[in-house]
Image 1 (cartoon, one colour):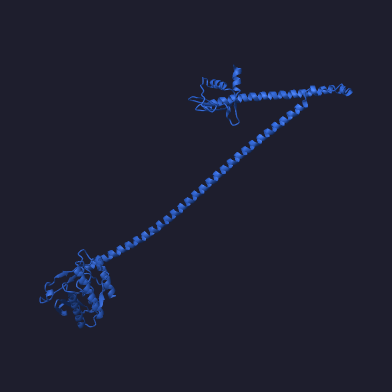
Image 2 (spheres, rainbow, N blue to C red):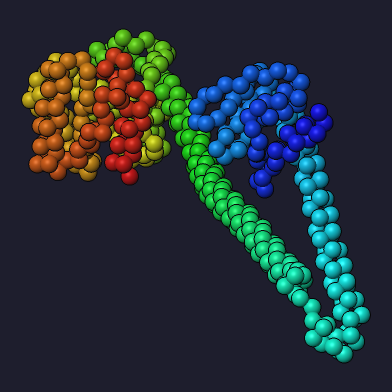
Length: 444
């Protein structure tokens, strides 16, 4: 039984690539697999001149035409290890037998050669004496030299084949190593290129971030400068407001000496005080010059007696236009003789208003020819389209009169609707500031 099992196992072999081959019969393969798996196997014929055994742990397929034996499955490695051990044992035994046979053959050849030499040595003298009787019939004996030459040729052929195989394997190993080195070098070069590209990208991002930081710093500096400018503007506005508040709450104190004054002074009691907002700063007459006030109302005009007004207690300045006296603040003081004219004509037509103002100008020039006269334009209003049209017509007529009669005209075209208060009649803080600048520009 052991001999039969050994004979069956001898049919198993492993190729140079590590593949299993079965060179025996299918029945012997089935018995061999049953012995290895220790179970009775059932094989099928799926086609393709093959046999198949399959269970939960392993799948074995044998191709009869190529003698190939494939093993797959969960436990395939354990079965492969067993088959490798069996095939290696058989191969070692076959190699040992071949080696023994080869050695025995070499020993036999060597003995035959020695025996031939001895026989030839013993009979050499006899053959020398009688060569005819000493002739050896070589045809009846094996040709030992021919056998030796054939063995030498075979050994040389084997050596040549072995050297060729060694050379091929060496070349294959060298080619694999070169390919591996080339692949490694190519991988390193590719990785190096990727790192360089990534480095460039990071440098570009750093440069962009630097530009962004620089822009932000510039914007921050501009914001700081703008902040300082705004703070300065706020300080100037607050200063201007404080000055405006101080000047707009000035007090006019008027003292009446007699009860027989004109109608426009009769309502003021003796030693009474009148407080007027948005009044003009006092322009004092330091030289003790008198101040004359001319009031033109409808169809009458009168000049107050200069001696009836105390110039040391009443100091004032009124512009020629109707309602602009409550919105201006002169910035300097004059020591010259001053004459102020006021025209009250809110219900008159533009021609009537201009006619009254012309009369006032004539009165001023008749009284003092050396006095320089200026007329201020009417400001814009929001109390109706008709009123605004009337204001525009009056300003045009006044401007024409000033051009024709060598009279200065103070224009207020830079005052718009945003310069009016909520009521739309009087100027707000912005409008008052603009009007103040207009007067200052004229005085300068």
